[in-house]
Length: 296
Ligand SMILES: [Mg+2]
Image 1: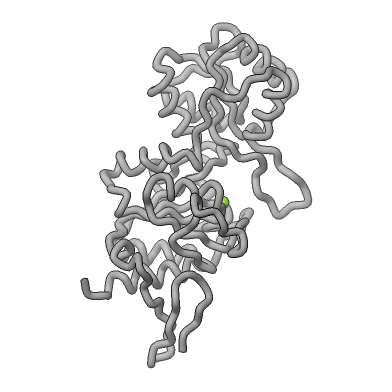
Image 2 (image 1 turned 90 degrees about the vertical axis):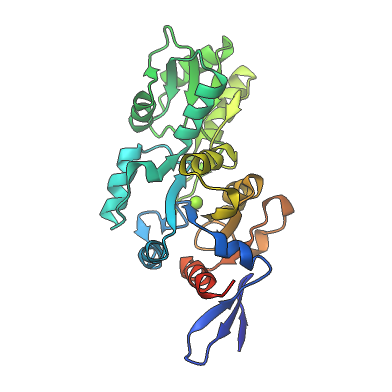
């Protein structure tokens, strides 16, 4: 019996278990040493952890495959994520949480080495992370650059000051391009990209740099830090135009999970096509386990 339910073919084994038949990329899957996981829509939705997440992570550990979490959502600090993941039963080191703020910090250091003091449209958590990275978060006077993130504490006066500084020609960086933050609540959560659109309307300027997914630099930084080649990494996420596009651009395997935003029908653009579509993490778990037990 063959079940064609995703890009991988599954086959019913004599013992009743369901195993994937590895596709054309099977050699690539055998080489995977590290999994980079998006968070919201991939390991949980809202505050609800998916039942497949903890078994998936346990299997990665058993197989000797490392993992990091990667999110554009910097309304919370790295420490906040470590704590909230811990409350869900996921114990992580701080360096396993990679955020768009980190990508922006790397951009600042690389492209704007003179910048020390930043005016920030962001939450106290984001400001704390920028401070930990060595930047001085300042009020308007004397700032070297303007940094915009997912500011859920957005304040009109602060917005006006940011617009003025951008209008004055200060270096202007956005941590990520997302227009909205996904939510199950009956509301719309304008994200960093929407705040930047407002600022563009007011000043005529777009950000000088936009870090975060789908910019592959954030993923390349993870690979450099961990000494991984692109062939050894798989990116798992629920958004085609961020998670999967970044995977393509970084040359790593992309696994699209249908537990969040994307539907199978939305996979149309070759520039962001996943290597694998999974209904949930348990299918990837089976694939990775099987790839380890398949002879070379
Ligand atoms: Mg997501």
